[in-house]
Every structure is written in structure tokens, then in C-alpha cells.
Image 1 (cartoon, rainbow, N blue to C red):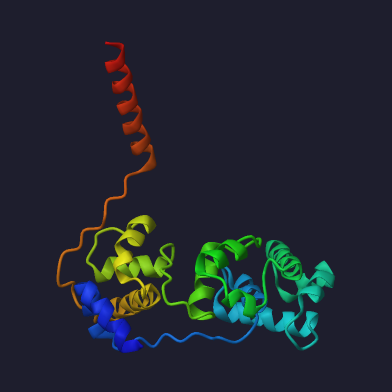
Image 2 (image 1 turned 90 degrees about the vertical axis):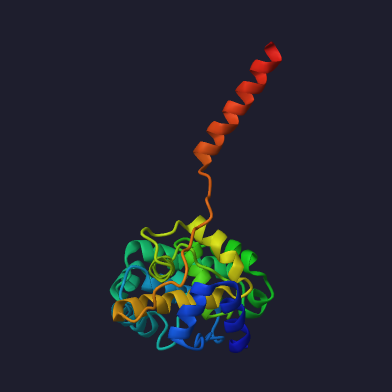
Length: 243
């Protein structure tokens, strides 16, 4: 599997091939255990916090709300506000956790077996209905919990920065431009993202190879400019009709 992925990425992208040579085999592994509810609750806890602080809060959450095991959705709904605050959660995160618990009970956040049967976009649409859960959070879940192979998190700073330094760009690529460029990596865009994260590490260590060729990103027309051009075309057509 890894050899096939590396062969494909190297064949379609010479710069990526250089990164792969420097990094080595893709060592990305998915954690295929645990319910989606628990993974999303953990993701909420980690938002805007470093790993140590988030894990401390989660331990209190397990001990004080769950009685030693990860709290069930019903336990989260039944827990008094002060008890949740005592764990270290902000009011916004408490609201997100309660919404997650409610939507899990309602079935909007499904059990793992049902979730696995859905395609990537369907999972994103379902899970982003939860307060505090954005597309990036779901994309991380798709990659690292569900092992989906064709996810490119174009809003991720590390992915965008890795692309910039690996491809020798002066500016950060826009998410839309990166998405358009990254279509060549399909169906292995998750692995491409993993290599871009590793490119950041190599860059910081001073061992990232220079790009072997110049890269030009696809031009993505801005909506405002496109609307303006369309208005000009319509106005010109009306003017010709009046003559």
C-alpha cells in the first residue's frame, strides 16, 4: 500500500517526489478504535489548547463526570454546569459538548459502524452540524480515526505552510488554489498532506531539499471580479441590442 501511494505521488508531482525521498515511507497510521462521539469530544477539549492542558482537562472530565470512564452523552447532559466548569471547560466548550451529546442521542452523530458506511462529504455534512465542530476537525477525524485516504485539509496551516516551503513559494497558497493543485494527488491526498506536515519539520531542521522545478498555482478567479466581468458582458450585450 505504502509503495503504491509513494509511486503515485512521485509520478504525478516531481517536487513531492523530492519531499518523499527526504522523508522516507509514509508512516501515517489511523486509530480505528473508539466511537465518533468520544473522538469529537476530545477534539473540542483540545481546541485552542496545547496537548498537556487538554489532556489534564479530559482526565478531570473522565473522573468527575464519567466516574472513571469516558462520560456518556446522557451524563454530559445531566452534569451540572459547575461540575463541567470544574473540569476546566470554558462556557463555549460546555455548550459544544452538550450539543454534541444531544446530537449523538438524536442520531445526527452516528455510531461508528454507520459512520464508516458514509462517504467523506456525507460525514462532513453530518458532523459539522454540531456546535464547535468545523470542517477541519472532521477532516482530522477522517484521516486519523477513520483512515480515509483522499482527504486534503486545505485550511490546515501546517499543510499550507508545508506546501509553501516545499514548493519554494513566496506566499502561502490559498485554500482554493491548493485544492486545485492537489487534485493531481488523488486518490492519496491524505498521504500528500502527511508529507507536507513532514516538510515543515524538515524545513525547521534545515534539511528540506529545494524544489526541483518551479511551481505555478492554478489561478482561481475571485468571485467579485467574476461578477464584475459578467455585468460588463451583460451590459455590452444590452447595448448591442438597443442599436
